[in-house]
Amino acid sequence: MDAIGWLILVVIVLVVVAVAFVIIRRKRRGGGVIATKDKG
Amino acid sequence: MLLMTASQIRGLPVVTVQGGEDVAEVRDVIYSPEAGRLVGVTLNKRGFLAGRSRDVLPAEAIHAIGQDAVMVLDESSLVTPEDAPEDVGHPATERNVLEDDILTEGGASLGKVADLVLLVGSSGEVVGYQIEKPGGERGYIPLPAQLSVSGVALVVPNMTEEFVQDDLVGLGGAVDEFRTRLGLT
Image (cartoon, rainbow over all chains, first blue to last red; front, side):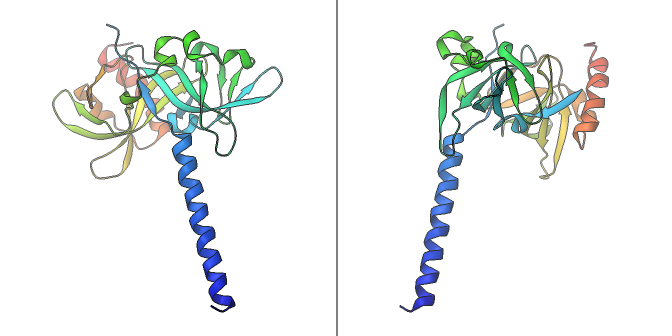
């Protein structure tokens, strides 16, 4: 594999890692709008 | 009158008035449909990949909610679930209303819940929902001061259909008129 091939491979790996970080962060941060149960 | 959506509040930093420390971040917004007001928020720890915090923040301990931060007096405002009201300490996460259908009492679908609209400041009053209409576009509906939420659909008065607004400014004006027409004010 020549230099361009390695460069493309590195870019692809970086993109995959970045997307994985974003997905993991979103899952960990979570969040929603929760309604309490009626008391009456 | 400052109207904010729950999604604008979620993710806001929780900052102490005494010291200006950034102690947590808002995770879930918990509200009482029966009382028509915010009852508290759950929290995330600070940090890029930090997850849920064990502590929660009851509405009574919130000093102010602004556009850029939720203010508390000091770090002792954050309490453990055991010391918080039951609804805040152990929120019913299965009762997340986002994506719930909105039906009028006459059986017409107004769309799905996209967000909750709150009057922030001292009361934390819930004034409406942002909805995703059946066609896909967004709108806002006012809510009565009290609303029952059960199952997967929220049932609103028939009259709500006449008060669907395109933006938050329109909603602010529509809430009082809507409640007057319902005989609630």
